[in-house]
Image (tube, rainbow, N blue to C red; front, top):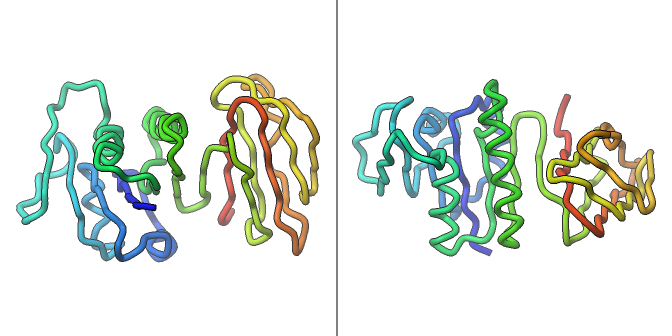
Length: 208
């Protein structure tokens, strides 16, 4: 798989943990003020995109796409679309979840967009790893203290959870009743999650 890392401008406090998820051969797209994270992550960008309303355009010899400030796509969404057009099929989004809940929710919708394209994707922040559960079985090992399943794309049905403190068989989770919060993997086991209709956001807690 061709992996692309998208770096946004939301806070990243644990650079060491984030860097462990980025390979030396990954294609790295930095979005505007995500440039502030390059030193902390010890990375060189493969591509820079942005309208540079929140960070000065760097004067370095790296391919750069300058976007207009008035546009429909956010810098991050544009970066993802550009990566899709270049043939990448595995995505890691970092620096995309922060204080601005509107930006955070918009960035999480990118996971739905990539799932529609049947591409692998997850978002990572200092506390959790987030991905969409739809067609394939999702696994959570017991290194995660908690995991949650949230309906963010309408009602999801035929949900099964095995090897967890709160198992489920043929369950339904809807946006107006989010009861799939803070489940726990049984010690020494790997939780298995299946969804037969609809989609869920799986949140794997890294640390509290």
